[in-house]
Image 1 (spheres, helix red, strand yellow):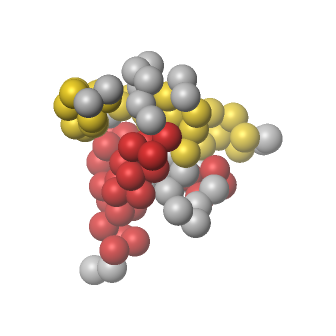
Image 2 (cartoon, helix red, strand yellow):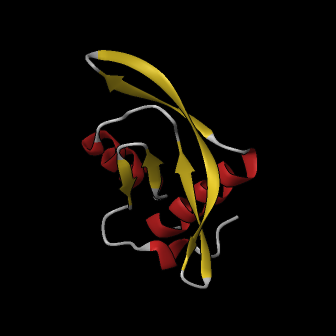
Length: 93
């Protein structure tokens, strides 16, 4: 099995379960943040992103996105895994 296959399965599993809880350091304190899957429009396509309403730093969002290979969105902004764009996530969920 390749890393891409494992990441795709993980992403599909997260969407299927309805989200994932991650541990993130916010303002110097570790907190548990729940990320729920949300569909977003991109032109004529829809893609899946994970959303949280908590303010999480962009650097932490990037780390999480690269680890689970799904885009992540918070009130601070939206990040994608390195080398990916919205079109890479149109077939998940």
